[in-house]
Amino acid sequence: MKRFAAALILAASSGAALAHSGAGAHAHGFLAGFSHPFTGVDHLLAMLAVGAWSVRQPNAKWLPATFIGMLLAGMASGMAGLALPGLETGIALTVVLMGLLVALAARLPAAVGAVMVGTFAVLHGNAHGHELPQAISAAGLLAASLLLVYGGNLLGRVSPALAVKASGAAIAATGVVLAATA
Image 1 (cartoon, one colour):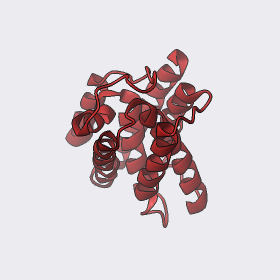
Image 2: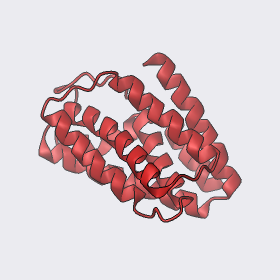
Image 3: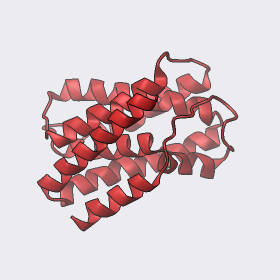
């Protein structure tokens, strides 16, 4: 319970990364990429939720790796200049949906979960690819994303089920606020 409380405090102290304004919006380099997922509540919560939710999925231990792989694909699309319509709203909705899945301890068929998590990762990756278009920034972002997704997985394993569900509800509520302001 203390670990989840600490995670929620950290999440609440980060600001929303809702200003995905394109290349040049941030400094570039490994540390810029690494710090970015920790400074935006939308990315932070989505990645933690993917990890926590994957714990409860049957035959889906590879969901975190799917998220990271598709995050990379989404980053490549952003770096190539592909602009996805409604990106900010889509990212906020990923937070809502992942939070609901965690809160409800929803179980989905493995293929459905993989497609959903992969789609969410592409959205997040595309935004990151626009913001951090250098390879060194992408490497930092992927390293931080690995920590967050697998950190969420660890929290999902060691935290009481009720704490995980309550955290999911808080994540979903935060996502609703993000969607309303996107």
